[in-house]
Length: 196
Image 1 (tube, rainbow, N blue to C red):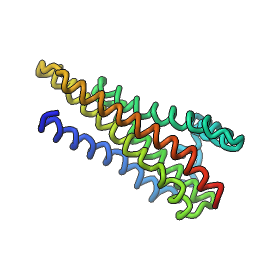
Image 2: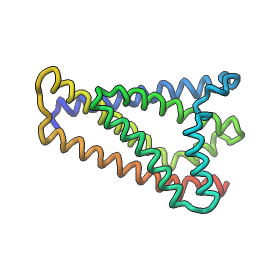
Image 3: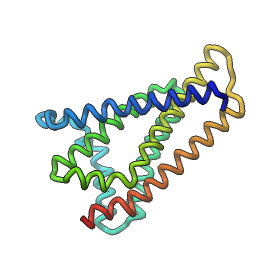
Image 4: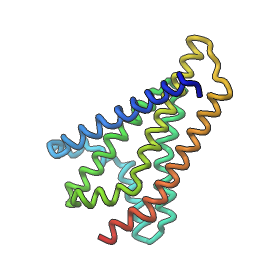
């Protein structure tokens, strides 16, 4: 990766982090005032609720492996959307990152609203929270790919082997992070909920 590519990639990572953090922080701050709009809250989305119900059922039946697979497949789908949307000039990446920021904050705020103390939320989510780095990294890959695609479309610059190799290596890092985080979530973080 050239110095210019590295600088652009770091810029893309910072952009993804910001696109995620703004809706995350906004939702956490405004969540209590949104209770009267319960039907608009992201956590009431049927698809999200279905995944949560499936994971909860797996954990209730002591099937941690099934929970691990569900968590991993759900999280890797979000990362895949981020990366592959780069081919479409990162339009899907932008929406996916923003929506994920909303969803994450909404889930945490709802856990607190339902009576879980902040300390418990932190101790339960902190062990696997490094999955966010994998998600943000996948978004940066999507933006980087979009940037490289725009260089090809508008300036005729082809992606050389080094660019493709960089994208593959970074994508492998994302898969490893998401895999490890799903394992920690299914086998360690969830136990934090049942212990305390």
